[in-house]
Image (cartoon, rainbow over all chains, first blue to last red; front, side, top):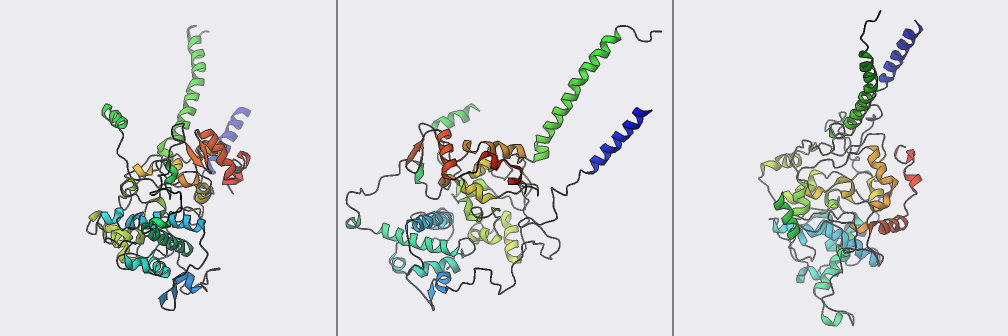
Length: 219
Length: 231
């Protein structure tokens, strides 16, 4: 009965092979970001560093860079030179994090303010146009009034880039015709097509075109 | 002695012939089950502690993906926002909504909201969000029209064949970096060209090949190599 023995051997091998069906590779004994941990009482695998810990490269020796203040007063200079890249980055970050309330124009009429959040002041009022640069950085870092702090969502360098962009917004909204370079039309022409979406964010909902409506009716 | 009638010969032949189809059908069924949402969770809405609507926050309010998923551009993990990010707005908006009570409770008690993970890869897959974002893969290329999802679900199968579909021909999906977070992005056509570096592209083929060079994508051989994703 050679064939029977062969068959038995085959079945045994197949059973052994099935024994390999475990999820050890799929679910490895490590913690994925923000995964639940049964070890700690608060069930967080992501731990906060012990208070007073200084991460490598995070000593924050440059207090002005991280606080926007000289002593107790906000300073009025940028801690690094501003170039086109800084301005573009500032615009992008402004449109992501600030525009929901402050609006892309900085007039304080963003969608969240329209939905009932306390309306922020326009950046174009006298007080804020005269405010030193460090003031804006400090508000972003520590919050002000109803505005929460954004220190955990925006890096310090990006916060400074936003400061530069806010100043540019203020200048743009209060520019006189004499300041416009010769030969440039005001208001400047709309960008030809979608490359004008600064942050690349989804534009607000559009009314469906008549074509879409027709297809919907057919359904 | 003849036990079976002659006609049974035909039946036995048909049975042997039919077995081929039966086995083939079994294989087909197994392959279908393996690819079905039952196994992959594709398109399946999972229960969450709060019925968070991406549609409302993205399309309705125009909030950028990165407002909450802050680390998506420079980390492998896109980041699930802490409760504080919710409270940035909900400290003043919908403060009495019963729907948001778990959020407020989490903020009061400092206990984490325990969201159910929607897009989950096996641990033997090395995946990094930042490289995809920075090489011009749009959010909705993999996550679908999240801006039209009242409840979040997994858009793609996340199976290896799905990954490889793109890794074998990334030029079919790439878009300019400044359009990565645009959920309304459409691939360029003659009536709607894409502008990159002052050049106008009217079809995905030419744009894709241009972006592969511009963003210095690794060769197909490199990005389809086993150890790229299984390290």
